[in-house]
Amino acid sequence: MAKKKFNFRKNLFIKNRLVILNEDTFEEIFSFKLNLMNVFVTFTLGGIFLILITTFIIAFTPLREFIPGYSSTELKKNATELAIKSDSLETALKKNEAYIKGIQKVLTGELEYAKFNKDSILAETDEHSDVNMKASEEELKLREEVAKMEKEPGEKTRNKNKSDKK
Image (tube, rainbow, N blue to C red; front, side, top):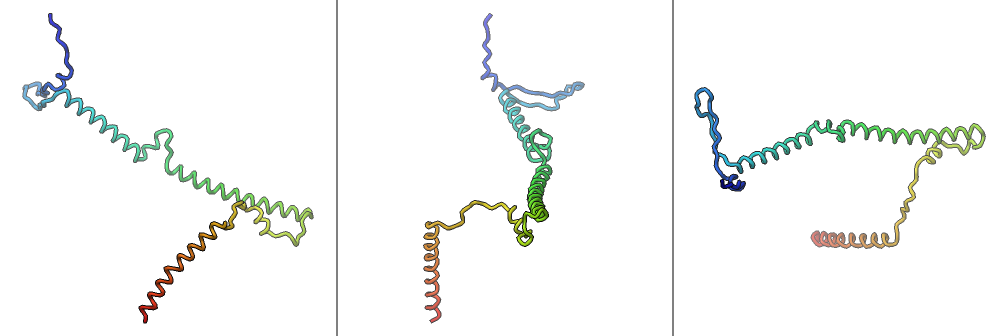
């Protein structure tokens, strides 16, 4: 007996016929001419298409909220609102504590009444930044150059306007 080698490449392009028949009458309902390569390409493209459609449905609809790790937009919105409220409550609490400490000083006699001012107490609670707001020498020079450059085109347009009026 001679062994036949199975050549996969040749079998990919051999044409086959897929026929769908009515079982009772053996009437041909539908038929296709196919080869293995067409079937492979069709199923591969179909699978990729299904994966893409599923990904887009999950990514752009509220279904993503059911996936662990994704939070709803409403939950994020509520979290930011609560963070802002808690920050404002903390600053109000600091101001109230400073005010109460000032009143306690007045009541115990540690602070003279004439020096006591609600605004000065509130000013103590405000956080001051340590940023130096004074302009450096380089900035001053740059400002002077810009001012000179702005004056020059302005003078030219004024001179043109004067010559047009004459």
